[in-house]
Image (tube, rainbow, N blue to C red; front, side, top):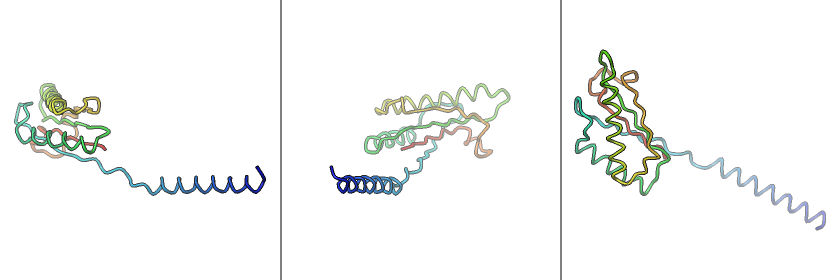
Length: 137
């Protein structure tokens, strides 16, 4: 290979690398996480029909647009000991995981966090009966 060919080849490789880096920098950022709150009846970990419908719809959408992870943040109302409501928050997250599994969602992508009462959004008892379902694509 002559020096001229070697220089042309180096320029081409440099140009190709520059184009690749430029395209990578221009790539669209990942979409923001989708957050869906689910509310439960007092002292219950049973999914009502609207919650089952939402989980069914989300599971169906995951077939067309897969998720990297589904995060469940389960909240609890404030009590003296906190233990009973934390257990209930855990049971609510488990109910959602089972519902997603029943819809064919791989449980390996689901992570449950029992937040408890510490990070409640507001003073409402309804907020303490909430599980936020966040889908990260």
